Amino acid sequence: MSGSPNKTTGQFHSVKGNVVEAIGNATGADSWTQSGKQEHASGEAEVKAAETKGWAEGGLDRLEGKKDSVVGAVTGDKSQQISGNAQHDSGKAQQKVNE
Image 1 (tube, one colour):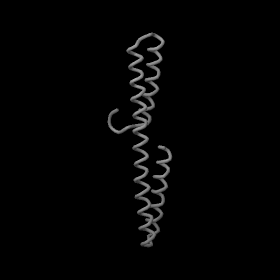
Image 2: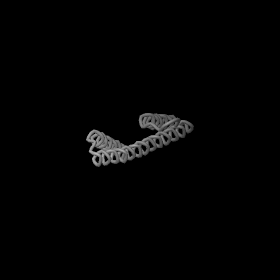
Image 3: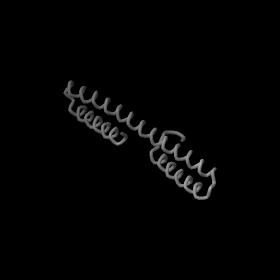
Image 4: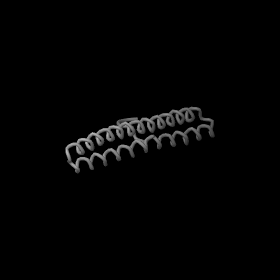
């Protein structure tokens, strides 16, 4: 796993690991079986890390959006209030996707 965790990359490595493991099991090649298990586990860990990161980012967006919405409501700035509500809703959706 390099850089930021990525769900797609993690899923790719998880599936690839399963394939390599299956080939190892079918051929009796223990090194392939072990390599496949390790790659699968690494891929699953990357998926979980990406989900956690996405959920946390969604939480920050929700918080910042709520703050902007409240400030907009208090100051009478409808544009800021609408923008804050949109950011809050976007963060909520991002959290839902990453549950």
